[in-house]
Length: 319
Image (cartoon, rainbow, N blue to C red; front, side, top):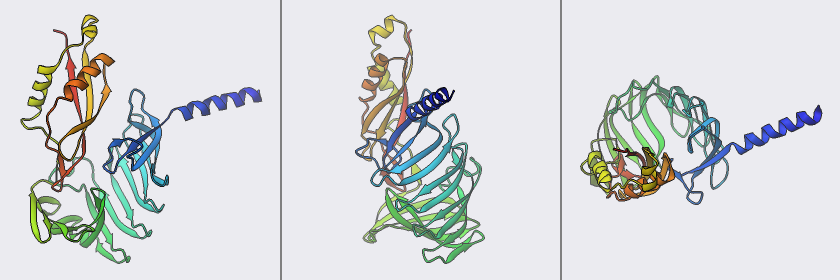
């Protein structure tokens, strides 16, 4: 009996270990290679998926292998429950709760020193529209010396965060938990900063200043990547170039191939990958035609072009 009990436990443990997967990410939270990774996640993958985790997922910094986060996902791969995030020095960065993929309720943030940084209150999804780039109310804020500067959702905050992998300091007035009036965003390079205007949480406009000169202005906090002429032009080009693979046609195979790719800061497409496909022959043809796409206009955040991931369906249908 003891032998069989041991054997059952061993088989169960072996199956659990074999079910673990590892994915590598860059600083923009996009899947990348081990060589270019900033952090990696380990956990169980949702059945039928290649990149969606479920249950408890742990992440580690690639350079130090120290813990970066502990997150909880439901069986469909949607983040749901309490999560913890850490600085690379090992100190706690944030405690947060997620509800169906979005932060919800109270989140507490800390400085690397361990001192309290801010207390945020996230609302139900849909409470704030796209004109509100920050989906929370800031209840309390402390400076690095531990002095509380925002109390009962009102005050002036120097909020330390990150933009494009760089630490920034966002400074401005908080009214009823929302950003208001003019905010200044400073970079480690003090020759560069941003000036943004808000009205009770709504983003109005922003501008980038370098060496005292305005170098660009933006009226949207964040934009998605897009192609000139819109997606209709993109899909028309695909349909004109698409060639139905012979074997799949003869066997009556049809369906959609979902192709993902990265659009870099210059608008060039790379890192093509098939998310799902009826078969490999259709997948290869879908990749071929998507690669023919011209440059896109890259996604932007606060006026800066950024890398972004995009997924498009390529449809094969027999007439």
